[in-house]
Image (cartoon, rainbow, N blue to C red; front, side, top):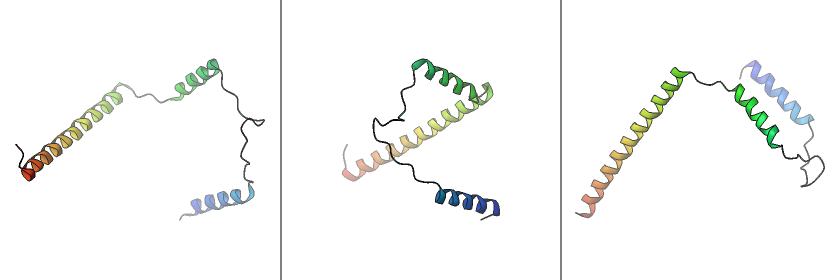
Length: 96
């Protein structure tokens, strides 16, 4: 355990001892949150989407290729396992 991690753990432990436990709220108690209006919700969604680091065309192409190749490999593995197990069942029970 390095010095920096140990100091962070000690700070966290001291904060846990000092901080009082929050009391659970009763339903309908004062201080409960109200629903967000649709217009405000959409504004917040747009604001969050502006923060997203969108991939460029090259990254998107690479990610798409990785997904397609992975799907093909997994499909082939499942198909081979299905074929092997079906041959084993036919050999075991002698069905035609």
